[in-house]
Every structure is written in structure tokens, then in C-alpha cells.
Length: 172
Image (cartoon, rainbow, N blue to C red):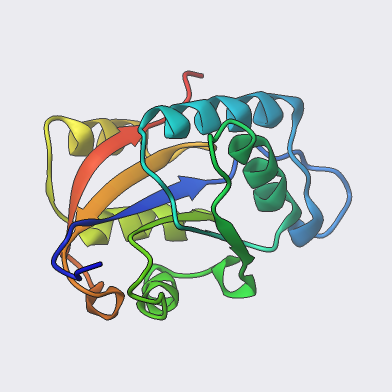
């Protein structure tokens, strides 16, 4: 695969979590979150993007979100559970993306706010249609995702390099 071919990054915030008396890392999904994770999975499958790799935070709520969402995919991508995604800043997430092998074309990152929303904002140098307006209006609620494209190697991922192609958030 040529590094000149457009690559896609999907930034996916975990679904709605519950607040039981456990550590933040151990918080599970709420009932609403389980429904929204599956719905987001269907929406992601409908994009037709063939994901090569999924990077998922190790927190319980992100792992549960991914487990429910990926059931909707026609093919499960390789999944890496990455501790550095939990509580990561946009810069830390870029560092993780920069380590991606160049044979990966399309990647899905399942993580947390404010890092996921911040990364979507800073990577999107341009946007198609009303995607940026919709993302600005809605923010990045639980189970939302943004689809970005860029050309070049993963080492070249930096602020402003991407085009925001689409944005989706569940209806509340």
C-alpha cells in the first residue's frame, strides 16, 4: 500500500457509563450505553470502512463499548488494548497514532473525552459538508464518533493534517 493513498482515522468515544462505587477505570456501561454502543457499531459498519486496526483504552467502559460495537462489523479488525489511551491528551493520542505501521490504512480509536474530542478538533484542518458544524453543536457525547482522512505516513499525523469527513452522535 502506498502512503499516498488516503487513510482514515475514526475517533470513537465510549458509550454512556454507569457510576457505581468502583474506580474510574472499572466503571461499566449503563443500560443506555449498551444500546448506544451497538447502534454506533451499526453506523460504523454502514460506513463501509474496512478497519485494519482498532486501538482501545483498557478501561472497562471502552472495552465493553468495543465488544458491543464490533459485533455489528462484517469483519473484526485486529484489536490492541492500549493503556496510554486512558486519560490521554490529544498530543499523547497523536504519539500513539505515530507508532502505527504504514501497512495499516484505516484505524479506529476507542477512547475518552476530553482527549478524543480534542484530537478530532485539532486534526481536522478542513471539513466536508456540515460535519464540523454538527460536531461543534453537539460536542462529543458518549458513543459519538468522527471520521477523518489524511494522506501520508502515520508518522506524519499532526494538528491540521486531516479532513473531517463525517461525524455521528446518538440522539438523546
